[in-house]
Amino acid sequence: MRHMLFPGVTVCSANPYREDRVKEAIDVYARSHSSDANETDRETLFVFMLIDLFNRNESDELVHLGFQKSDMLLECSYNGISCSSNFIHSLSLVFGNCFTFNWKDSSHKLYSLAELGSTLMPYKGLSMAFYVPSHLNYPLNDSEDGLILFLHDNNAIPFFAKNTERLRPGLAHTIAYRKSQTIFLPKPYTNCTTVVEKSLRHIYEVIYDSHYAHQVAYFEALCYELCEQAYIFSKCLCILPIPVIMRYAFSLDRDGRLLANTCIESTTRSSYSNYLRVTVTCGSAYVTVHKQAAKITLIHAFSAVGGQTGFALSVMELFELIYRLILKEISLWRYRRNIQVEQPAKLPTAVIENVSS
Image (cartoon, rainbow, N blue to C red):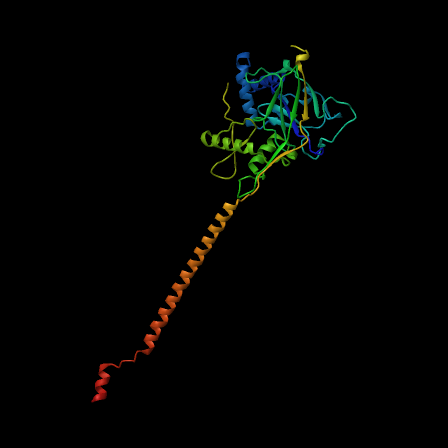
């Protein structure tokens, strides 16, 4: 199993926005709307500004407000191989700019467990060093210092609502993973599917570049997210674009997507504590596979044979009944026709009297 692929690793800042860029953007937004950007109104203006950027589909501006990879990543090594350039960018409304290592696309190399460099290392796997610029974080009540890390398949979308690791700065973290795979039976046994419908494809196109969006695999959790957004839209004609940015809602009662606005309502130090190192290593080189199999017991076999035999006999009896009814109708028709042929023809009474006279 040495040729097993190393998983995709997505890293985001736990605080998605830079204070210096946000303040500058708020000032521009306030001037364009003839508002006074004082300290008491900045938080309200910040929320309104994000809503306005979302409704105008200004993804580039949202990317600019967040932390870039060059702001955080100091070093990346996979089994002694430099990997700082092996990241792709994605956008999350919750965590801003996110960066994924070892994602399956044509422009980057996919690393397997067999890839080894010439540098000695204490742990095999991915080792990354980060600088967390806490002094640049925009103060938000629901954000904190550190990083968010998520492990996923190489062609899967990083869905941060589940299976995320929060990494505090000032510490060294080691994450060991074990891969498992569950294989479900196709229809009619289950409703499992691998087809990426156009509704999911739209989310992929918003999160990734269009080049990467067509390479993302089906993800069940996003289907539940789409159902929630469709229900919200059916009630209030808007959507809540969390945890992923969505520009359209998909109606529950008709096919197609509808443009929708957001439902969001208004509401200096430099030390080792700002640095962070994380190592992701494989805990087992074997994949645990859970596979469904169509299985039938002896009792079920007899039951199935008995049921099918009974059904076949019932069908045969039905055809026999129809056959006998048809034969009966044919016999009655022949009987009536023979009676009509055998009866003598009766002459009229007037004709008989003339013959007698």
